[in-house]
Amino acid sequence: MAVFVSDFLPDSDPSSKLQVVDEGLDQSNAETDGSPYKLIEIADVSAILKRRKPFSHKGTYGHALIIAGDAKTMGAALLSASGCVYGGAGLTTVSIPENGLTALNTFLPEAMYLDRAHLVKIKSLKKYDAIAIGPGLGKLFEAICIVEELVVLKTPVVADADALNILSKREDLLLHLAKNSILTPHLKEFDCLFGKHKSWWERLQTARIMAKKLSLVIVLKNQYSFIIDQQGDVCINPTGNPAMSQGGMGDVLTGLITAYVAQGYSPKAAAILGCYFHGKAGDELAVSHYNITASQLAARLPITVKSFLNSKTH
Image (cartoon, rainbow, N blue to C red; front, top):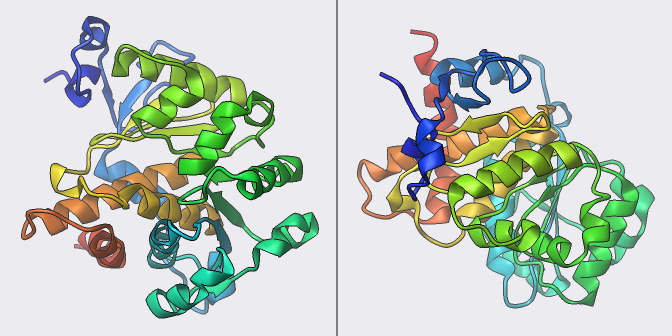
């Protein structure tokens, strides 16, 4: 039975109903006769995901930096950090305002702290294998300066939430983001970045154009998220459910994708794994939960991944 892009869209743009989705990621890419739309399957995730090796240590799995949080939005930073820790990064450092340090130590003692003042020292940021910025960051002068410094650094970042809002008002920064960065906008953030759209189908076409132009990955979030790579190919994530419709889910996803980047996965692979296991953890919890909190989902992630790997050995 044919699968169409419209099956994964909340609106009914006529154009989307004509676009067939290839099953699996090993089909031809957008530059050939194959469809640029690919449905992520279990075999695809299995081929991407690496098992942990004997004699490995925390340094094996990378050092991630999460730049997030403000005085009144510290929860976003903590949730993003939890996604990174539970996502398997070897080390997770969080740069938050100092008044959030007690909350960080209490909520997530595995994470380390970096004073915001150190973010202006560009050389000190080069030791991190992955950097995420945005959840709860705010849009005041300090936040803008941090985004500017990261653009100067020319290191790929995972940008979400307030970082996207800042980029939407600073085209000079957006156009000079490091190649292989990852943007993770929801509907409103996407429209702020790239202009108003009448339908999800239109957004998808813009995302394909901009991902190629900027040479980065865009994760367009919805119940079924779309991962658009640097060639304009679209990977459709099939996991996720309405029980996940609560605040903080995107923050956890940002941390999770960052964890995979830190572990050495390519931006596209990190986005695929992050979206797939984020949604799959939610699907597993939804069996017994009417609604799911972001904290519950983060804690579920290592169980979900382990269960997935075990299922591949039987």
